[in-house]
Image (tube, rainbow, N blue to C red; front, side, top):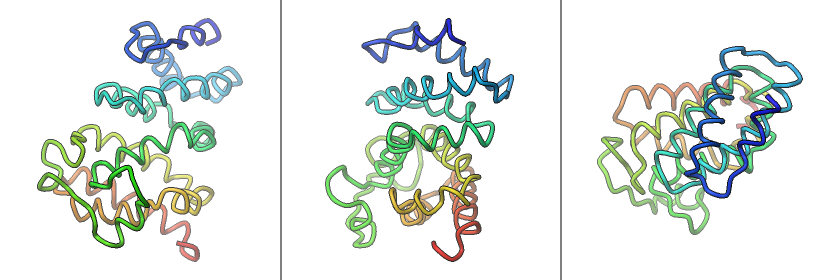
Length: 200
């Protein structure tokens, strides 16, 4: 992968060369599903590039990042690398979920959830929700967090401590009107709670 990795460096998220490169690398890695040294070294670089897309205000670029994350989280090692870069990888995804739940950027998300000071502009997840988060993007973000939840025995406590995931998911569950999002929310909650019964 070493010949591809330099192509990921760009000053703009819309540059087609890094976009195509990340897609090619993601496809190669996800199809081979190997945990070779080359893959282990390339994953953090790809995750860093994709995190730039996930932080974008363009929902299309966010969706590309999230779908490629999902393809790369094929094994325990890749999920651990993803988690180790959580300030880059997980945090933007949680922000998307908070936006979908109607939690503003300002203030404490847990305080807003507990107090009920949440403004959701749509009736459930039809089309788009709070902040214009589309149903498809929401589904893909939930899918990535669900994949990450398979490591709940090791990361569950930190995931909840750092991002208030249990409270956020409970709120998203109340808003969910689509079976596919409801299943992912419930499965993620189950994985987190089942592996961390004494602490969560």
